[in-house]
Image (cartoon, rainbow, N blue to C red; front, side, top):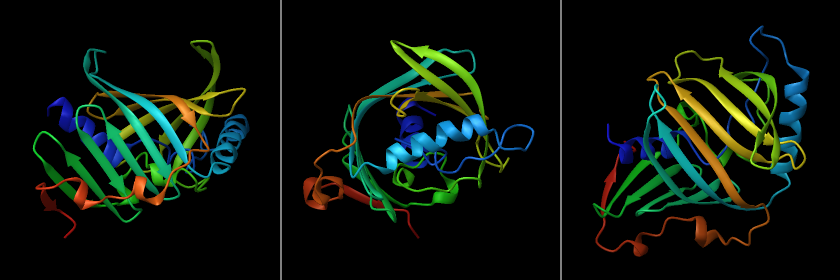
Length: 227
């Protein structure tokens, strides 16, 4: 699978942000880790205080040996359960909470799929929701440094072992209670690292900025996979 396709799948089924923030539970012993819960609670409270979000991101894909397979950068725009992701190089992703539109400039094609929360690992539209103690086991691994920031590392593992991933690491700014980075491990041996930057939790976004508009992509072929 080429890097562009792998990254596209990551964003449409995996990304931005943060269903595991809102769907965490327990540690490897099957009991709640109160320290991890306190970190996640603070993060969730901070995120839910935002009306709209705009943030830069860099996504890096590595194989099991740590060899870089590719990287992409872009911007996430999030308002309620709707989001718009722009990826440098010509990819645009929109979601209205029900459906997802993925535009590829190189082929001038729009792929339309259903937004299925059951298949997602990270879902930007879950950012403002709260599903604690349902889908994940969690534990606090301690503190670390990312640049000048002191971050707390929270490890999550899915309760559902049929999922394609087996572990995620969240790096949360200890002072600001914001998500700095996510590292994701899939069963195929790939590692995904998503770093955020220029985070604005009070972005002045209009509904039009996060909505798919067919008129913006004249002549684009639409491939509807919702049925």
